[in-house]
Image: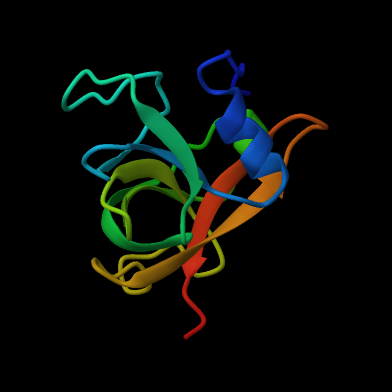
Length: 130
């Protein structure tokens, strides 16, 4: 499981509360991920945390047919999604068959959270309902 740090604690707190929190440069408005105390594009520390829409599209994926023992026994998609706000995020796709026929590139997705402990909930993405 992830270990929150002072730089990432806001992200994990948001996920635990069912919110996808990103950061953006206050001057440019450009969002970025993963969390860090400065904008990776400009180096500016004038950044803020904001609630993202939770919408994304499937950018790329691979189907893992040899999961770790703690991830079950069924194949699962390890994916990169492009968030509506611009950044990409590595995640898993849930709520649909884990097949190339079901995992269509550019398909609309929405975030869902799965609780793993009292402090960690992970953001996964599922096909958007509308």
